[in-house]
Image (cartoon, rainbow, N blue to C red; front, side, top):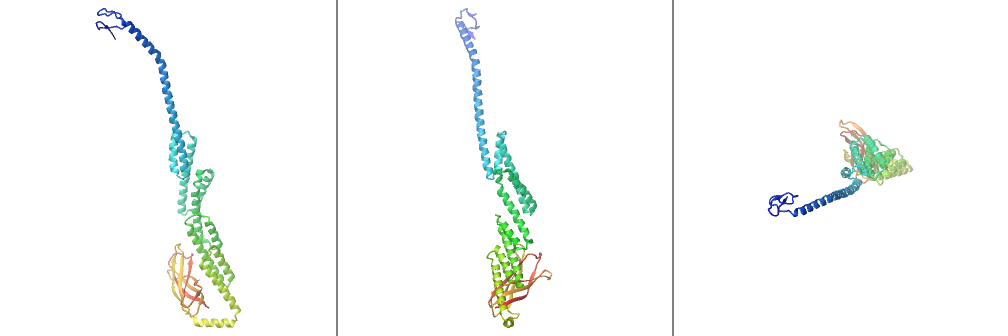
Length: 389
């Protein structure tokens, strides 16, 4: 609005004289011209300023967007590398979490999706391995072996470092299957060579349970070797008996029982050969003298019992004492094994150790039975046999 400088009345902007007092409005024209000039200047600047401001805002937005995307890319790459390290260290679940977040940020980044797919496949295989272990614990060995073979083939087909991290666990499961298969087969094996082959198989297994099965195999080798050598000895087949014991010692070296048995066989062979060289009369006289001195009174039984061992097999053990006046050797305890009904289920014998018993000495005998059915058994010594030195 414009006012008269003389009376102060409001006048029109284009008026040259005041309508109230008639005073000439000299400055109006200048003001009008000045205002009009300012308006023209403003109208001239706005078409320039608007594009410039828009350009600046667009450039700033693009720069911020570019910088932000670069930061996201860098973070995604770092997370991908971190996930790879975790996966190779066996931290598959943690790697999966990181990769899922990274894929959400960059769903079109192919290496990310490939790594996520690989980790999730490994997790599925790991779950399959858990199922295999359950089958092993349930002793479903055929099914466990079938599933494990499929897993091993899948690992081999992938041919990557990530999948190779599953190999140690697959090998451990294979060892468990092999160990249980061997343990299940032991009761059916009756030849030392077959048992020795199982020992060779065990040597390639790195499991804590291996030592227990190896001990069980060793005990059966000793038992079979002793049984067969004793049978050969009874038939005076001394060389065959020594060969049988030597075969057992190949696999159970330095076993005291087998060493003593071998020594006893040699001594009996020497005694037998020497006896053949002696005159019949001297042999008969010596035998008669020994029989008279020690007839039915050379030994007494101190103890005899049967117990189950930790593997469920029945172990017989006993103790005798020499009451003879001379050294005794090659002592054999003959006995009967009876069941709960007092029925004789087995007649057998066992050798007493040590081989030589001085007057007043005590000796022990033992034998393990793998073929007796479950139940309670008693044992009774029916007879004792010995040689007098």
